[in-house]
Image (cartoon, rainbow, N blue to C red; front, side):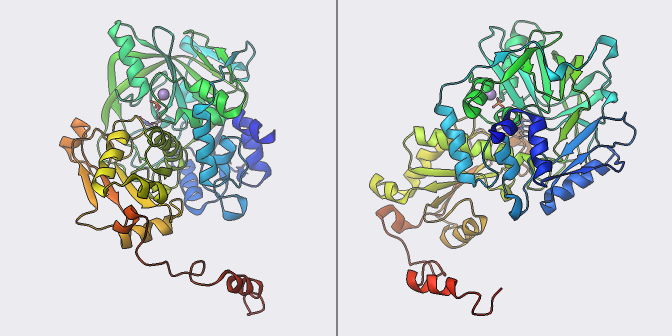
Length: 496
Ligand SMILES: Cc1cc2nc3c(=O)[nH]c(=O)nc-3n(C[C@H](O)[C@H](O)[C@H](O)COP(=O)(O)O)c2cc1C
Ligand SMILES: [Mn+2]
């Protein structure tokens, strides 16, 4: 029960983190100008508890920031504990259990949200001229950033003109002025698709952004579910409870009632402004800003003492890896399974900054398939690179399921010892893909094509049900009785 609370209520999530020591309240004044970002980055990089900044320089009392909401934790707190808490799972859950829960919810009946009229997110309401985004402690997260980011861990809400598709999606938004934001709305992402529908009608896109949402809703908004699937119904299926939503003040959209901050307004048809640069998920900041759509804010509503959650993107692990990477893993696994491919697990290794996905090949099913490496690679690429999830990740690494693909040490070992550089590399220069991948040429980025590949770490014998050599290790090179004796005697040998 407590676990479901964390998935459905941001404050319950925060209280859980504080209670288990996986968040710390920092009551000394901290400056939103770089200091919040620096502390948050260091927390990610040392797996320290999430920082809850309760006193922000230059900001009215009560306004708070939570950094690293889904950073990784130290071993004793459950490495994936914050991610698991987003999904209503026990803190000690392993990646496999997390991915399987996400996949199962894709096949469960959607649970539609329920509409409520009283909502925590309405405790404070500012509309029209009273809207001032500067009221909030909007942080400058890295010195290389082109501006201060309001939305790094919130999601857009848009709805198709017909009303049949509600899309929740995470994307960044930079403060432009006191009542506008600027940020990407790529045409291949669902916000871009819905935006195109409104533009076709010659109308602005009614829009809202939700910050401090139910954690399960944030996670689902960062998941590449197929087009026309409503993320709100998926969250209901995932948590077993309908999400409570409330009508916005101004534009007829519905947003989670249990949210810290809600921005309402519209996405203008064609107006753009410079956005970025920003330290990004792949670990780099590039020098230039880009023209991106402008979001007009006509109302702001927020809870008392609102908490702005913040992702300071960059080198892994941060939320683009722990949330986005995990959600992509589940969506990709589902697509591959549906195509009857012999894949039993998919995992975007956090260390690879969501630039590769490792697929675990079921070796028994592989042998039954009587296929060749080139055929298998073609079959996987055809399915994955045509999918919404597969669009996001450029590199695919195939590894036999004698290896645990969620263990990066084993994946590196497989790449080094099983991948043949001449015959095992399959480039896909025509495949469409996200243009943000750092190594793309400017031509590839413009065309949103290329830079994709499948890298096989399958051994030739594995296509025929055998393998090359046996593994030499504690677990594989000794009889079980001896291993048990060694473990039982471990302290007696003098080890602590
Ligand atoms: C912390 C975080 C930040 C993200 N930032 C962006 C972003 O700025 N632009 C973007 O297109 N996707 C971003 N994503 C990924 C999208 O949320 C993800 O691809 C999702 O599937 C988009 O929703 P859609 O599939 O409904 O279009 C981010 C994800 C997370 C978890
Ligand atoms: Mn979607």
